[in-house]
Amino acid sequence: MNTGKLLGDAKRLYAGAARVTGAGLTRTGLLSQTPPDRDDRLRHWAYSLTRVHDSLAIAELDVPWWTYRAIDVVEAWLEARPRPVRIFEYGSGASTLWLSRRADEVHSVEHHRGFGEHIAETLLRAPNIYLRIVEPVNSTSPQIPSGKEGNAGLDFADYVATVDDVGGDFDLIVIDGRAREACLARALPHLLDSGFIVFDNTRRRRYRRAIGAAPVQERRLAGLTPTLPYPDQTSILRHGGPR
View (cartoon, rainbow, N blue to C red):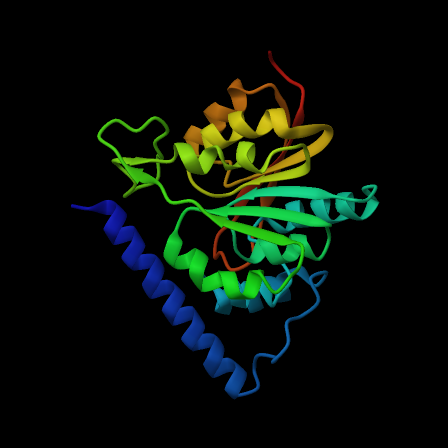
């Protein structure tokens, strides 16, 4: 039994049903045409469920795909941060647009060409977003593999190294794409001493091991996440911790 395919099919069915339900509730007036204020957490979250797995629709809610607690912490931190603010992001989407409204320069790398080309037209309307599409390459012995189901035989070395290609130091680095363990190791030398790393979905075992072995301090921010019907966890990492 291909559990990855079954899980993917279940997610697609859920997403389709949620969007159809949302459209019906909007037509009947039971759901507002405009999203509730994010401070009204439960209503905003319930509204967001009808935008599941649609990055452009999520972007209209002006939220990244992290836990609400993490969104609040990062937004407050960015508001207080001296300008200019420079950001690097593994994994593009709604978060790219959200960050571009709160920073001066956002460099984002996307591994999936189809998705990257789909969203590029919207992202590149913002003059401070720089999007790169760096696909993995087929390999019988990947230098940097991904633990994601369905990614066997793919090498993400070029994708992970994009932060080196862009170069320089960053105030904020977001790790929310593929091969996240390797992304963390590669990103740390580019993080300013006072900077943040946002690492998403940190309940997963392989991410817990990577964070535990890295020279970082972690703040775990669990709870509701826009569009997800279950709680999740996003972590904020700083320099420090075990050497």
